[in-house]
Length: 487
Image: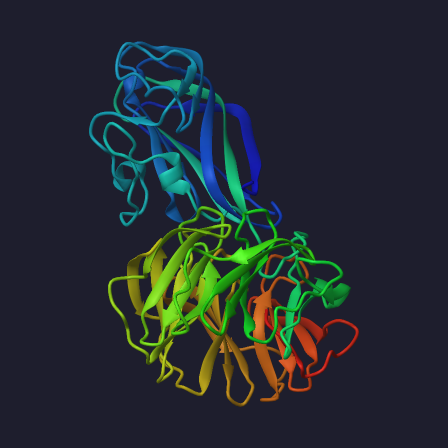
């Protein structure tokens, strides 16, 4: 079942709609809890009165410039008196173009000449989205994938011609949003856990609350745990493949076969090979991500010759598979991670060249929307990309680096642009400490850094953007160097 939540916002207090002008109201959505991206949205208008409805335009402006002009030039000359309306993608019909508008539920509707940002008094760079009949946009297409928390929303109401006026007694909107599972959250408590694998193949997990392990043990499909598939099976990553709000384990055998354990805490509820075929040992699982924003995690591959490919998944089933993008960058470019760099709800691909250059492919499913070198410069091959994470909780993935001397650094990203760069932490732990991944271990919605020492000791640095706010060894013991932190 898709993991979704609902947030409803309603506002009262009459908004006067003056003649031939624009009025607006705004609010900020904060502290919804967890990471969420919009799946759907609808708007309600209460007590709407106007003497000449075809003068009316309504625009909803959301985070990052997302917008929809959901009502424009409808109804003709028949006055509206105290009308109540719901505008939703699933409405049975468009608003009528002429003859008045009765209270009810309608689809977003736009008649006449399509307004631009200048008509609304907004920045010229903002592209206004229009529904039928002037365009094809919907609430889902305009807002789907947008980051929910720390977002500002504005309703603009415009009377576009003399000499009529009106008022709006109340308005509201409802957001249906998808809860994004934290990395390595196997028990669904909105905090990341630590996944391990022993040299002999045995998997294990530590359920975490901050730096404390609340439960420790082996994992697997058959009791008593653990179940060891053997050293020819390697944990490659984890992700929520069945959209149940809990991370699952993605494996690959030495012969190339991919497999998934669908997890509920320490217990695998179902296991099996992923997909209908084995692509062979020349294909390597590189990461997981949700490339089409449908909920279940997908699998990102790279061939020995450099070719990237994606399997769009639903549980253990492959829905679609094929090369990612239209070209092969070659074996000197390696896939390092996935992340959502442009805040559209869809995973992108992070690369690093043999000379150290980072690059990002912005993705929509298997299609590359844009690709370019990331950041302002090439830090050189002594700096290696270790992971991605959202360190400042802005909905955009950032890049976590480590130098060969051990120094960690973060690039705070906005698309392909770095908006903040620097070494992080109170000190350099040295080359005997390796960054293993990121996760939100204390539930503050900001990514933290997971380390492992050469002697096996795990540790966590809690971060707020590029600021270190605390850290310590993780758990109550060191399992030793035969146990490797996977994520």
